[in-house]
Length: 116
View 1 (cartoon, helix red, strand yellow):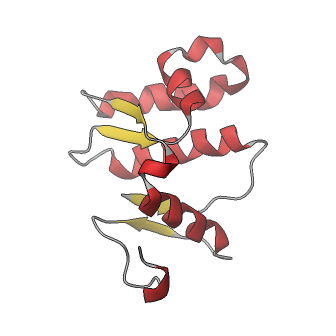
View 2 (cartoon, rainbow, N blue to C red):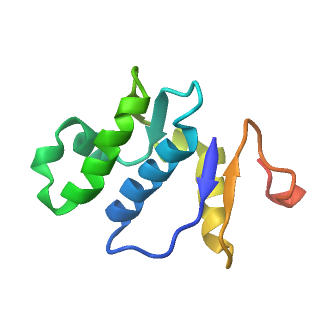
């Protein structure tokens, strides 16, 4: 799992695309091949990028990154089924400085009362 906070984008969907691009860049040299998102539109964008002309530049970068992932897969995971990562995303947005995190467990720097 990984998190990173971003500056506000044109729309929530732009933020989701940017988050996927960042995750792919962070994991391009790992064995990770599967990505999950709570955004059904994002999975549709990856499957049919030409149907989303307003995101062409962002989607071209993601298509280029897919070369690093021979078995690339993106799946839709409803927020209700992934409360820990939803919590991490909300926590990252609250930081007022740049934040990057990659790990296999919840970071120890989160207050114990906030850990699920």
